[in-house]
Image 1 (tube, rainbow, N blue to C red):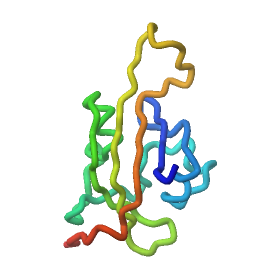
Image 2: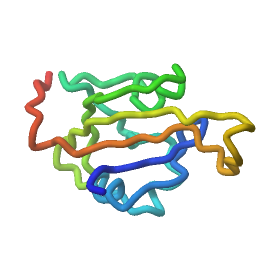
Image 3: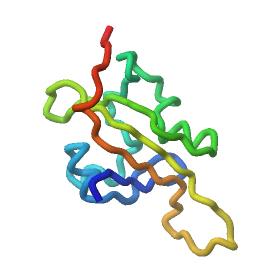
Image 4: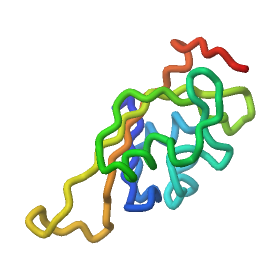
Length: 125
């Protein structure tokens, strides 16, 4: 799978990821697991270059609303410090309840994303 996948708990902590997520985010698995959200501490930007407030980051927005968010474009700082990496992100809340089986790790959302850096020409302020 070429796209990044994160499984996150009820507060946004990453509890599982695929190898593509590590590659796209430039973050080793052991550093990605336990991170508090998709975006690094430096935050993320909207396509117009403005800094998004934390509550509007796609994964945290889906958790707060309990609804799917689709095809949100965000820019995150590259770990190597060379500008922004642009991602197209979708987040799907997982169904919860006893009838749905055991979920001992308390997974609540699945976040998928693709690196679209080569396809986005943002207007930075």
